[in-house]
Amino acid sequence: MTSAIKVSFVVPAFNEERLLPLTLRSIVAEIRHANCPAEVIVVDDGSTDSTSEIARQFGALTLSHAGRAGLVSARMTGFHAARGELIANVDADTIIPKGWLQSVLTEFAHNPSLVCVSGPYFYNDLSRPVQMAVRLFYCFGYFLYLLNQFVFRVGSLVQGGNFVVTKQALLQIGGYSEGFKFYGEDTDLARRLIAVGYVKFTFGLLASSSGRRLRSEGLLTMGLRYALNFFWATWLHRPFTNEWKDIR
Image (cartoon, rainbow, N blue to C red; front, top):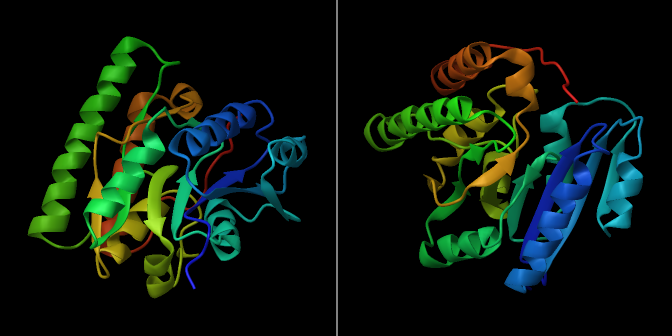
């Protein structure tokens, strides 16, 4: 029997009372705009603020970890609870624009072999030069995506916090890898997903995100860290960076 739920939005959150309302508001608006049977799941990863209360105010199924388990564990918790055919992974500081959900549904309807679709972030709260540098970074990433998936066949490209994957494909690969806690988790997922179907990265699936990590860590430091973790996850199947810092 086919599930009545088409899309399950999974939102991992830790002390996100400031930005979570904007994220959930954008998700609810998209569900209504696309007129799509969907559910919203917020996984509260040990928050000490009003994150869970805010999630419930928006009608989200709210799951809580007793302590900090990390991003990947939160995604896995949401995945196990999800009833939808598609799992939409949206971070708690991400805003999806109008038309995002319809674009996702169209992508999957037009390509039966598609198991995951993802797109880049843009940061309206950062300076124009930094935004341009981020675009160049994504262009380089897209070039690597083409090489890795269609030439070397060793991986693909997924932007964590802005991707949708089929539940069936996740079940086939055993879900998210607990060997990754934060950095490289999306690259590892993309690498394993290409064994069961097509992974698409498209600039047509933009989402807005907070630039707080870029502001805190700096463009060069963050760019280098993400690049190293991308290569490590693709070729060595492990993260380059095991620790991460929560920035709120």
